Image: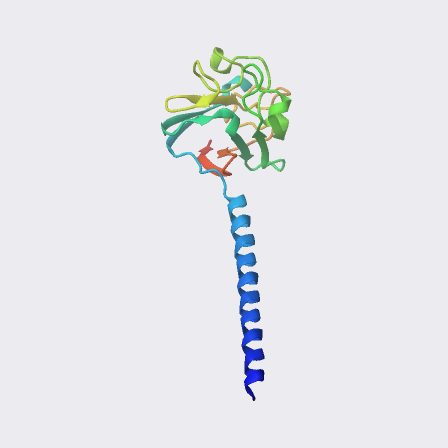
Length: 203
């Protein structure tokens, strides 16, 4: 190989190296921007929640009341959460699932704009939960738009959607739904798609 051939080879090698660097830079930048676009908002730190499912053995549908209390951690705007309600049991019509969405609802009550899935699994009546206060929703405090420490989310499970009552003294009526023995309540922070509270109740 003469001197001229060696000069051409070095020029080609330089061009190839520049091309490889450009291609690698393009690939890395595309990957980086794709990753940054998929980064979600961090989930709030909910240190603890407590749950209660109040079922009256021989009562009416107003007795199946869910209460989830924020015990400690970050405050969460209600509009950033969804609540998944799942009833299971021996009945062939179970499991059934509904989701509370688009919160807060207008006013204080839950209506069909706030429920996805089995709409009869979450009560929409105007009867107050627990005999007083708002009919169904949501935060039992002066500021219903933020779920923070000490505040309780509450709503009612109609017996027509899933009946958790046990015993022979249950009234026979059209309000009796499929026999259920397990209720799962999952609260999701929608911007981060993270579960911030989970409770399972068994009757």
